[in-house]
Image (cartoon, rainbow, N blue to C red; front, side):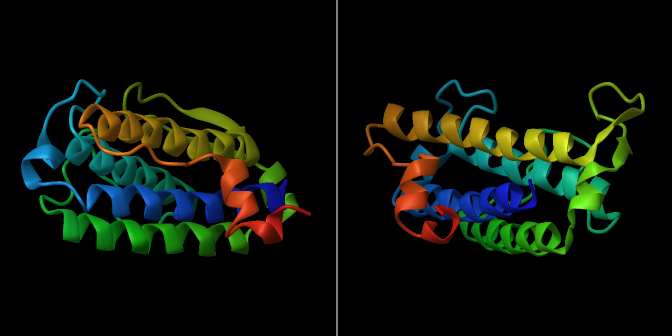
Length: 170
């Protein structure tokens, strides 16, 4: 499982780079236009993905800042958000690289923001949610880009494995 999560951390960085490169081609009004995604615009969606990652990383590591709202806007400008995204992706990779199989099997307790009761699960299961959540909202960002009449992106894991992620394809 550890290699599986390391692959997902690497894939996450690759997919985020692709999304952010596409978004950087937009006008500011397109970037902020509400196209009906759960967090409205690309601005809201990309901020939310970073918000959620910071919340989870604070839970996992007891380090860093964790917003108290899922719709928090951490960066008003795309350049600041992009820099924060790059740093968070590297933080995620470094933390995943620090884990071992024993740690993945241990139980992990946290309190969700939306229903603040203690939840205890195996860390591996929680990591599955962590990476799935990112993919889910990147899909909304992709849909928003296409709704804005911009080219579709290839974000499939298999595409990553055939290109930059060849080391994980064995």
